[in-house]
Image (cartoon, rainbow, N blue to C red; front, side, top):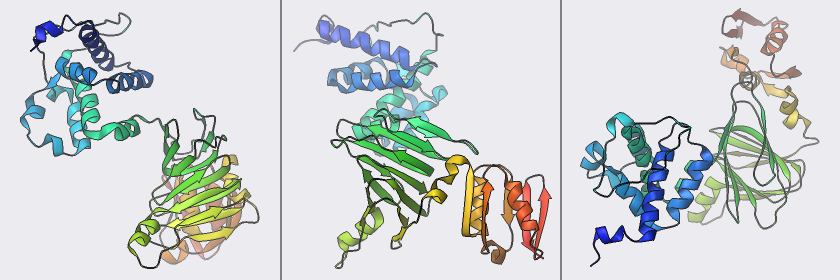
Length: 357
């Protein structure tokens, strides 16, 4: 049997250990970039020897090594523990590690290096490739009142509305977007060989070259087609129909002007719009209300301003309003409501309170 000392004379092994030392140094650097992290995972997945050598360089001790249930534990919990550098220790093996130093970066302690190593190795071993890629996928977030235009790596453009969050993931045969919350317009670059998929809590949306608006929250998703055609799958309906005798309608083909409203555990509602100006008016920071409940109008304004309009009377919350407003000016809605003699509108530091007189 070849000894471990003999293995060190193998050029491939020596190179793998040098690379492992290099990546440990890079990952522990506070200025480590997203691109460098991606390159690390490409290197790690390319060879089982790379995983072995990376583990040889830094392995878990202390709390992590003393817990027998860690292989079955929750991944998020383990990652959170690994990120706490003060509680993460490293035991170096007898084989020397060759570090590639980066003079332009600040030196870090071994405990920080161990914490970074724990995070990446645990994710790699426990999550598997698909979850690794999901964890590393670029995430785009907008704050209150912020809107962003994002060009994805395939050339598709996303207009992201205020208080929204999405994650993008691309493979050779797939373009996958997860709209975690909020609203966005997707203008999809044509690529018949790679369908463009958008997933929300309630739907899967598939397109090739088209434009559509998606608005999603915890309770429902609204899809509006602006150009071309899209296919929408109501995920929970598909799951229910799989076990039911009578299959529920779970997939819809939508054309320009079609809108699909999908709520969890509810039949989807399909609507044909005369125009889509109301749907896309947010791109111009305009809010168009047509027979809109006052509570829904107030919620829309809350996306763009920290000053809230609070409706304290349930009956008032259900009142319908019509009008066009500046999304960044909630005071305009407050002034509009003051014109109703049946309402009492009061201003305070946090916004406005509306109740019936």
